[in-house]
Structure formats: C-alpha cells, structure tokens
Length: 280
Image: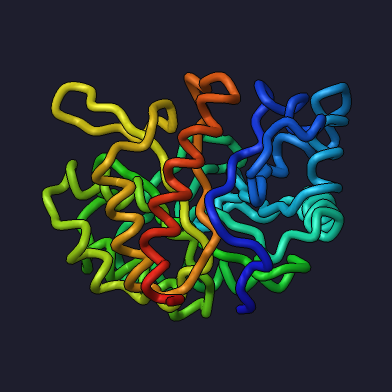
C-alpha cells in the first residue's frame, strides 16, 4: 500500500469546529479525518461546511458501523454511496474497526470484540477481503479497546490481530491509546505487545485521551492525551521508522479550537522529535 501524501498530527472533523475549519481558521492542521456515516446524505449548514473542508484539504475517512467482523450482510445501497463518497474525497484508504457492531440487523451502538479464535480470524479475513473488493480504495483495520473477552480464546489479542492483518493482506490503523488502555485493564506491557506486532503494516495511527472509572480505564476520546500515551506514540514511530499520519481524536468534551490546536501542536513536536533522527 502506498503511503499517504501527507503526514503529521491531524484532527477529526467535528461539528463544534466545522464552521471555523471551513473558514480556514484551523491553521497548521495537515489533514482531517471524516466519518462517512455522519456526512452521506446529510444536508444543512454543517454538511456544507464539512464538504467545503473536504474539497479543499487532505482527508482520511474512518468508518464506524460496517461491522466488519459480524455476520449481517452488507448494505449494498450504503456501500455504493460510501464508494462515491470515498472517491470524491480523494482519501488514500478507508479505515474500519476490527470488531462487530451489528447483530441481526440491529445496530449495537458500540464496538464489540471478536472472539480470539482461529475460526473468528478466518471469518474476519473473508469478510475483509470481500469488503475490500467492494470499495474503490484500500481498506485498513483498527484495533479496538475492549473490557471483557468474548468467550475463551485460542490465542492472545496481538496474535489474533496479526493473523487477520496478514491473512487479509490489510493495512493497520494502529490506535496507540487503545493499546495503552487495554494494557492497563489486562495487565500487559504495551511496548512488548507492540514489539510483537507486524509494524510494517501500520499506515496510520490514532491517539486520544481516556478516563479512569473505578478500577477500569475507559477509552473516552474526551480528555487530553497524557504523557505516557504520547511517549508510546513516539516510541512506536521510531520503530516503524517512517512518517505516517496520526489522528488526534476528540469526540466528547471538545475544547475551544485554540486549545485543541495547541494540543495538536504539542503532539506534533513529539512526532517531529521522534522521527528527526530517522531522517537526519
């Protein structure tokens, strides 16, 4: 898969800042990430502002509801609309989560893990290959947070993800915060986990904030990125040895644009420092 024509720390295109983004007030943002489910078929001023940004600036697309690992048949009408949208934006790829989000036609409104079994891996590989054949751009997969395994597994999460990526010959959207959160909840070393993975398949990364609720750490996308997560991003970038686009996710408790841009700038400095020696 060809690398993206842009790198650095991008932002998600979210409603509170769409008008400012359309006016060009979000200076320094190298790319935007957009969720097609929030834009396809939608009208009104927010849609006009979003499309103005996507027609002008580099964009990556990120899906939320295709239920890649599920059993429900694809929605043919939606896939045709999605294909048209992906082509129009010029995104180099489209990302989806390695999980299931639907059962018997009902949306679960969350990301649920697949069982870490060989049968589930084979099923996911077949679904990914089938979906890839229906899309006009490459499909890449994101690792998720989960809070309880779905039944007794035959392998660890890392082995399961690697088996699906290799079997489907898919690129990886590596969510650094998801790795960190899972490490806290399940008691493993995130660096050892990442070192065991096929990092050559990483084409994009996500980074976000989280929240501690009792004894559980929850991936909320509603807080600033903490130092250890930023350091894990830098550590991973150094091992990948090349620049990939990294998205700063903020989906709740979204701050004022100036504050969000300041956080993006601080993470960009970490990004540049991590990769400076590689490109010296």
